[in-house]
Image (cartoon, rainbow, N blue to C red; front, side, top):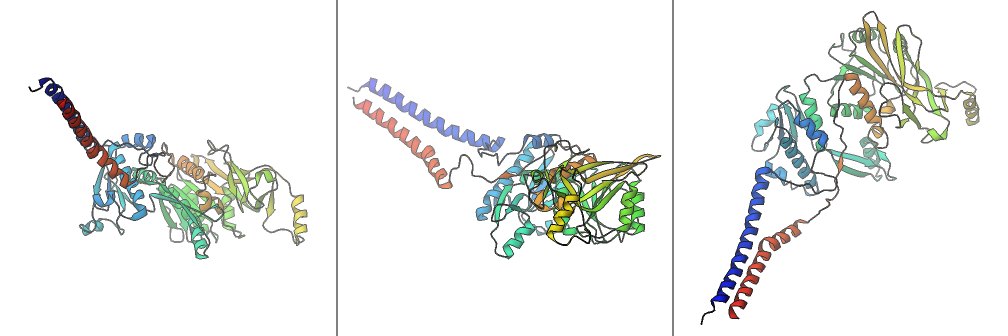
Length: 503
């Protein structure tokens, strides 16, 4: 006689098994569809490599300018870059682009294959290559092209672990000296900086002077930092300029080798008196050259670059026998009171009692410093003579950077800033994380231009993710959970049903 009781319970077990398997399959399908439609992703890296800062999201939500991000690659090629060890860099870049577009209704993303659309490159005045990111504003019609070197932050270190500049790294490698690299993700700050730059309808214009032997290589790193922080940077040849554009906001005279002519200085005077939003920055060169006309111009603005180097005798405030620590004071020092700056071959910047001029110190030495003339007395010949001479010099705190402004009948004019050494802007100091040279100078320029900066970013290291699953393991886990486990459940259910049926 057929056992209907066994059939009843056996059929129920089979039914439950089929329902569970069907539910698992449907759940997988639903999750996949939701992920594609809602773009649901979770960043499991320990330093949130594939996410952006909350301050960035807030800025993007308030962005009013229409921005287009164009990637010069086929979308699939860019997402699955086959550039071996570089694949993680481009994968991270693509994810940051996606997050930017998701965070703002005004940002769109387009992928352009240059091989299939060769005419596309003709729209821009520079050569495009694969893996470029073009950031373009529809409001200002300005654009910026990012290369992989710009959305990767590469730091160089010598054999002893000391940070060095890219230029020094190339010299080390030329002499077969070991150089180490540390590559961090800079995609977020590179794209954000480009967006801020191209969308700013009233950008601050900064010019570096040329024509009088200015030390251009020494300010390249600082120039790049200004561009990264949304300043429009240009070069102005004062030999070829009869009238400085009144729309220029900041002019930097960086380490000139030759004295400026009276005609140039008279034009600088006119330009500075035009309005309060004009700033002239002067940085003397390392050579002991007396710039008579320039010194007279600075004196009329209440400042003087002494032909004396500041030397620290108190070892508590010296990094070594040549490099000393400096501190920020005055208008731009807020937030930098506890920071230390490095000074090497830095001159004293003195404040003169010039009528109608107000001045203040910006950077100064710690107590215990002395002023050493660039031309010591004739009797100083030996090292013993030098030490004896140094012992006679007064010790104290000396200014190495200062600013001044004139107060006239029309109120306050533009202002003059003088920094005592071009080495304050050296690339090795600008990139050194333990010092605040880059942050301080950007704060100075942001304050001068009236910028309200709300986003400050640091590169993220390309560390292995906290949940690091190799591709082979991903395939194995997929087979286990999507095939083997459901089959095992099905077989177990069939086994239980048959066993109960035979009882």
